[in-house]
Figure (cartoon, rainbow, N blue to C red):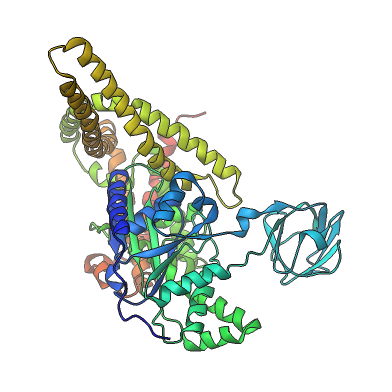
Length: 589
């Protein structure tokens, strides 16, 4: 089979949408950084696997705006058929995919499962397995237990391919997820890859707001192995892309898009895939395992939220110099990986308890870790700074008040509709925790529709004013002025955003200044507590530097790499001293 030596140029419409997405991302996020773009192959066909899928359609918006290569995304059919998102998908030539979870339906009757006695058999009561199910369908019951149907024996008995891990015995209602033949999708994907173009897949299968990534679906692995089985000379690469957000649902937050090291596929795996059967499944599983490991280099993936908060705090306590946002994400990834590998270490467990207490102490006083350093200030100096910043905050508030008041209806609409969609998404999902993954998407959609309407309404009010009060102006002049009033409002709103960013930074500095004025001793205790804990964290990280800091010499510092031998005891003493202080300052219930 002949192949193309260079990747085709991206269509003009893609370039236009890419600029548009970049503009929208700039408005929603305060900062977006990109790492690893130099790793992306210039002309080889690629399958970009993107995750975690924690921000619904905003993930695609950020990813497309930052990817140096043009690619065709796989898109769920339910999204492809939506009015707005679907139209954008069609314009960008997205590939619609029917997902089994989108066509799940309730089965008739109930089923019984006993994993201890017959782990591969399901029995039914009042069921019609022969009519409702077929081989390769999934049957879902209990706490999201999934059985892959192997054989239908009768209307009340069926066999599954594998035992269901952690399943409990009992009688359950059940749902059916029919097997979907994706041959047409695979053929379209292979055609693009053979033309040296790129495909984008979100391999978790759907968006979610969990702190850990969901298990990867096998679709992209089948696509990659199938493409190489058809065309062994194809220089196909799989590129992991990490979507790392700092508060993904919040307006004016930060994000980092990280491109990882491209993966090639071993020809031996392709041969196993060709042979089919058990070897085919092994080849797919091996590629999924490699991809899962690759994701760990570009994402922060913790087992639960509490652990993630402790790891983030430990990362902040390590080092005293300021890191770039790209270095911060990279260090987060290393810390999560190291924390997971050493989670049974008693020293790490003790360190985690100290970090958790430190977090709780900061929460008690309503300040953040980065503000602790600002507590090292005299009450007089703190008072002067406090007055100055309160005046600056009042000035910024006065300048931004008109734009803020005029946009209150827009702010209310965004908040109301996005929270309503959050509840709907949570009710229809079995993997979401709070449904926060849909908030940013709906904030952008509502703002994109409601803002022009609101500004148009204000422009009409201004036009009515001109008609009544300015008879000296011609109709054309009145219309021009009304249009100018409509056009200038987004500019004023953007100015409000910038003033808001500055005002928020000043507001965050107010609390530690209040604390430094009101109770200087608290500042000294917190600063001592942080300094001692930072030594403990740094010592532990450097002791296990091959795990926490692989190939990252720029993160090590000589002045912190060898803390005093008594740092652990000092930290314990400062924590004990602070606990006693809390006992004396906390009012009794």
